[in-house]
Image 1: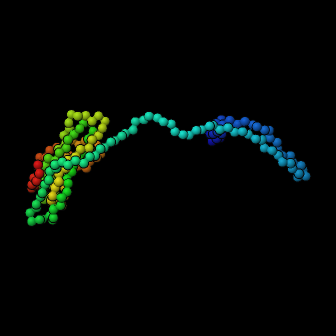
Image 2 (image 1 turned 180 degrees about the horizontal axis):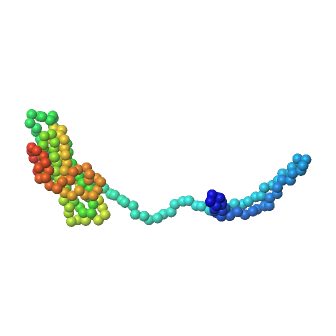
Length: 192
């Protein structure tokens, strides 16, 4: 079996090229007196397959994303929180932002409510789908609130169905604000 395989390899190698004999060969002649004349090996002109490597131009579909960001002055909610007895330290201003990435249809996201429980702020936004189609495009939407308060833990929730995009795993999606409130004890609404 090995001999047959080896023979097949040799035959395929020899058939992949064109060999032309250019000159007859002659073996060296040997004299018993150990005088020798130079011999001459046959010459062959070997022509292998002509292989060209390069590039060619083709039309293919490639994804293209264009994002235009412009700065605008807009009114954003501002919340100033004073904790009793300055319990959690000095206040600092920061932005609480929640965002989602959607496809198929345009959506709107809006922070509906923020409530505090112990040392945690709970930021709840609502995600609503519109009737406007995005075709095969994707869209990132966001809403934000500026907060001036002590440094507290922040948890983000979105009321609505989680869009099928990897980006949307950053937040917890819930069915309603009431479901969330029923699981949290002793809270105070600070924004709605």
